[in-house]
View 1 (cartoon, rainbow, N blue to C red):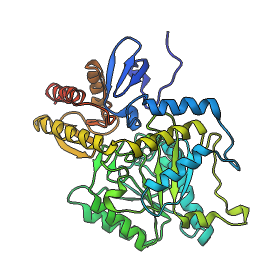
View 2: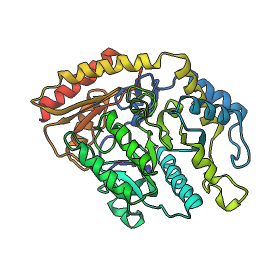
View 3: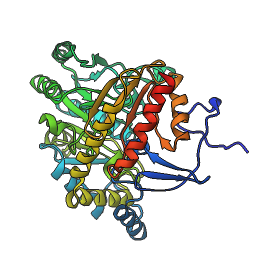
Length: 416
Ligand code: PLP
């Protein structure tokens, strides 16, 4: 029987296998047909401490029995208050206000609206344009797509998207060109610059070093251009520190977090802002308020999961686990032959290589072939074109990492 389910980012015409997953624990997901798979990409970069972490599962169950949902306009609840305070404690300095939403995309929408709302309220909207980085991905809602790379992801929806000014990605050797382009674009007084700090994820796991992030933030500060750090993917330890901005000593005006905010168990996002952004919206004039909401803003069950995640970060040696995992990824990458792979790269717990075969880009025909190859070997990987990357949960052990690199090496020998 054909399923009525329409899957995301899936070409149903290719008739690829769509395994049914029944349960998961740690770094492993279990399928209904009895197969077990190592989750090499943290189920789309969300699972940090491992699937079904007992502390997060218990927090969700307790909260679901106590307060499931309440309107958040004009009402509040303890989980939302606790998580907001906890986020401010651990976020880069200078951020003091937390606005909740439901996904990384909406965290970005909120950030863009905050930036434009700020300039609307303090300067009658004289600054309206948004600067973005080439190859960026910020989500699939209209604003998030507008500030992302134009291409296969969004070509059909171009009439819905607004124009932005694009700064080149700072590839090795081209760093100064990026800084010069940013400086020139900032001189035109845009509203904000939005960027993925240190690693551009869906754009191909493209990496650049902390001093460049710092230099970009400094240019924005000099021109009073709001700096929006989209840490939806890079947050929660992926780059080796809790937030990537820490490595560059960058204090963004606006910070987007999602995915691992709940340890990856349940959807929740937050957009953090400085007192200056909040103050521009705070007044007795109702027309200056922040006009954004969704039905489930700050859902108590999701906030309880986030509170449990924050407690895990406070009380357990998560940085130690990330460091151990990063070491294993470094060793694994070193095993991958330059005959078959190029562009070996790693930032913290994210490792990537490019297969010397097939085209890059999301529509590359090699990606589904590789996906099926890894599935056959009991591994959940989802290459971006010919870029094979690992972003596993922090509980993934040495043996599981070895199995994944064995399979990647085999794919190199087979396809490159
Ligand atoms: N921003 C970045 C940097 C992302 O990597 C993603 C998703 O991968 C998003 C935003 C969108 O997040 P979501 O898929 O939760 O809407």
